[in-house]
Image (cartoon, rainbow, N blue to C red; front, side, top):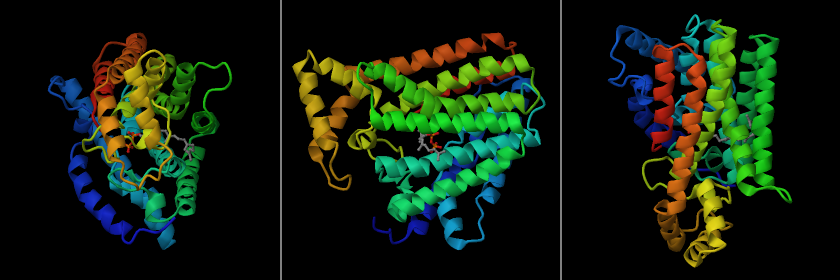
Length: 365
Ligand code: GRG
């Protein structure tokens, strides 16, 4: 893989775009909506925002390496942007206990570092050209540098987690295992006799739902919230995580400001729900079969080669009934997640978690 001339320059451009996003991370996640009118709700939003600002600056320290190459490559995707969904969720559930404790702040960083590490690896495997509005790390440097950078970030996450005790270390290890298994099963596809849609839903529960579930769980655990909140929050996190990934599948088709090229996943041969529905429709519908063929022709081609027909096919898929059904499915998972919150007391945190879930599924980037 060739090196990119000026990855630092690309990151600087993205940084200025992200700086404006950073002004009010909680607002970005819907936690400053006008519905948060009461003093208790405003205090909650302020606490989460304060936590996010702290996590942001602690992460910048975590991503500092004395080795100048490691320093540059590990900061690269962090500085390029990202929504910080997982730390925000951990901080939010922490408000059911003692709030932004040191343990919660450490876990929020470790979770974001794990997520970041997985993005470096994922982009190599998917041969994705862009991430967070900049060339992917493997494009900017090389596959090997991107993989090692992911490993470095994971090492830093492990160190933070080790300070949180054995139970948290085990939870993080189980989550890491699920991330890897989700990725592996995605690459291998459904086995003989396995339903492709069931297989896919398990893949996304593992590769996306698991870390979001752990975020919700650790926020409660490390803020000493009542133990009985942990299970419903874990279920909530896993279900909204699946919903989040289903929305991501649809965002992959978008030609808006997503930081990625439209159809990146499909072109890389990554399975998505609209494609699975289209495959099923193609068994009985000629138009669906023709569209599927055009999309499959675009997969397995060099991602740098322009393919006007593929772009047109992506636009058709975007407006297709199968994509509408995928969006409905995302909303169904989000509703199930919110239903799990019935086990929590009524109040500003439960209300904020509901708004958080709604924002995750109605997002466009
Ligand atoms: C090295 C930890 C590690 C894992 C290796 C590569 C891998 C195993 C697993 C893949 C996990 C993965 C990348 C899942 C996709 C999750 C996802 C929805 C990513 C996009 O998340 P956003 O939208 O991204 O939160 P931002 O950029 O906003 O942070």
